[in-house]
Image 1 (tube, rainbow, N blue to C red):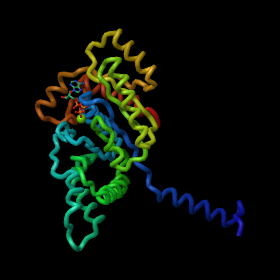
Image 2 (cartoon, rainbow, N blue to C red; image 1 turned 90 degrees about the horizontal axis):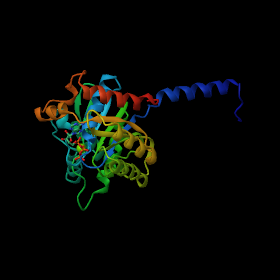
Image 3 (tube, rainbow, N blue to C red; image 1 turned 135 degrees about the vertical axis):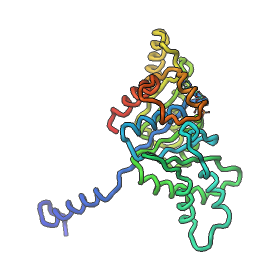
Length: 281
Ligand SMILES: Nc1ncnc2c1ncn2[C@@H]1O[C@H](COP(=O)(O)OP(=O)(O)OP(=O)(O)O)[C@@H](O)[C@H]1O
Ligand SMILES: [Mg+2]
């Protein structure tokens, strides 16, 4: 029978579609860091997490996608199991009474480090030679399922972008490219942002954050940064000054989540992030 608008049957369809829509889960928004080694990706990930928790942009899955994981150190959290280790375990014998998928799911839940408002997951070492592709497929499926539990996924990357494709991410809602305060650094940041193109990941928004700027900021440097960002077609979200307080916090081993709200570095970071989140979150 043809579909006839206005009929009882069409009303039924509309109701069914609406019910389906509410049943369908909203996809989490993905925020990922990029930038040359040592520019401040992990520092800004920890500060962003601080901001998002403060603004109740939760629940968040924070993913440390650096082979030399250290986001956990800035958050003062201990890591006991990484996804790299789980993949390795999956190559060996698994208990007889469960499937590989169930095993993977169980292990990934063991690897989640739970905290208030967010969980942390550490990717660990990438595959060595003789990669067992099925393990990666199991992992990708488990990650997809896990992602449904969160409103945001925050990925701290290493300089390379390989982890992004390993995580089975198809979209990045906000890519934050971190640069040192020099025109050359900004051009490098632009090139790094372009490295995402062959990965076939859709990047919805890209922003540049220039880190470790002198305090106070010389007007000439700000003008140079603005000029470089305009020509790089990478909008500037803001600059974060070099902060002794961050260095002291890192040395003391205290979490960046416990930095006082009135600390200049927190105020500056919040200003940058609020600009980024003003775009429909
Ligand atoms: N605004 C800042 N003020 C002071 N120190 C900073 C600032 N940003 C980063 N640092 C310091 O610079 C060093 C490198 O920062 P970070 O580890 O965040 O960089 P990264 O981009 O994550 O490095 P990698 O590429 O190795 O992962 C750290 O010791 C960090 O404490
Ligand atoms: Mg890092």
